[in-house]
Amino acid sequence: MRLKDVKVHIVSVPLKEAIHWTWQIIPITAFDFVVVEVRDEEGNAGYSALYDGVSSKELLMKYKMFIEGIVKWALTSVEFEPRDLHRIASICTHHYMRIGFLEAAVWDLMARREGKPLCKLLGGCRKRVKVYASMGRLVDVDMAKRHIDWYLKQGIDIVKVRFHRPDPMEDVKVLKELKKIYGSSVRFAVDANQALAVFPPFWDRWTALRVAEELYQLEVLWLEEPLYREDVEGYVWLRSKSRVAIAGGEAEYGLSNVLRRIDVGMYDIVQYDATLDNGVYEALTIANYTALKGLKYLAHAWNPGLGWLINLHITASLPEHLSPYIETPLDPSWFWEEVMFAVCDKEPPKIVDGYVEIGDEPGTGYSISSEKIKKFSIS
Ligand SMILES: [Mg+2]
Image 1 (cartoon, rainbow, N blue to C red):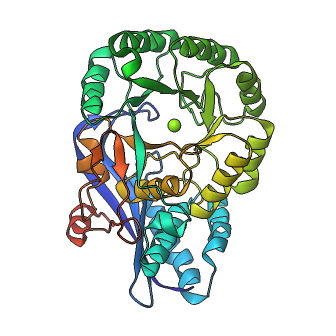
Image 2 (image 1 turned 120 degrees about the horizontal axis):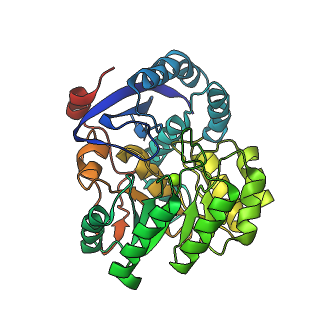
């Protein structure tokens, strides 16, 4: 195939209150992300979006320059096979430009061209996917309770909390309190975000194991990124000792890199992200490999709506036993609808009884609203 046009929009959505994610050094007052729009000769469109974890306008402008200045020329000049696009993504990653989200938009376009939901183009047919609520801030018991009560009203009974206090046993204390309140009505997961940690707390292997032991007592579903990404042996060591599932992979890219990490036994749960990492083709290849190894694949999906929908459809294309849930960023409560879907032509899909339904519309079923893009675009 060949594209007719590739457009990149840098979007900045002001926040009604500052948010301090645990992985960021300072609070943010606007949420900045990239939206990509691809078109073919027949006028079919495809969309995706990327939040790179930093939310820096200056950095995001480089995506626009790079994609519209170089990548667009290649994709509009020569015929390409969509399954070869990960090679371009790989070159770009090498230059610190992750363009998996652009590759994902091409898959969205292809699904629209075929008149099929994206998950069907990818070979799957789940009608709905179970949501887990992903919290992004360090919360005390009261704030967590306010959110969890709201999740339960929507039927969501799996909640991921962040551990980021200087003493992780203080994080454990908060979780113990929540477990006392909710008993078996809520299952928890814990994300330590250590894989790309650039400022303290830094966990060592013994800290991670001690936390894992505590989490096992609390029947936690998984412990995510408990160690720095370069400590491959540490992950293998921890996984051999931990009675809680060890998850990771969102910080990785490139097939040989991720498959090797699976081979050496770093993870029970592999968390690749098509839009943050290197695209749909790599995500599906990794998911299939994960299945062969008897592991689970849970897409990392802390993405703006158009990117999250790509990961939702990948999940819906996989068997439920392999990929049971979709991560959904629901903290603070207003963030999902007002910010993540700020430039979409529709409201986020409704969560009913803890599940999000997969519609019959072509592609992801969502497009950008030109009016909203105009309102929030800074490029
Ligand atoms: Mg994570």
